[in-house]
Image 1 (cartoon, rainbow, N blue to C red):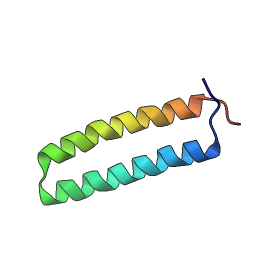
Image 2: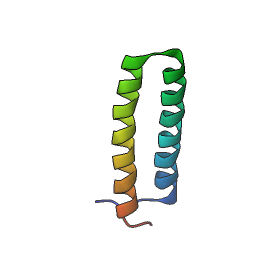
Image 3: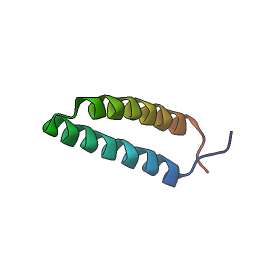
Image 4: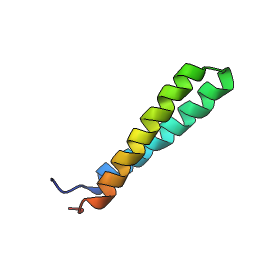
Length: 58
């Protein structure tokens, strides 16, 4: 496993932030199928962020 950088951790957090915003906007327009897909992507991104946090920083 390669060590992570601070940039990796910030990128994961930014992705989560963007997905949360997308989920909120899609809910607002009633796009239920898209909201479900974004929820799944959000769960995946949160798992990736946890993985980044477990890796040692450079």
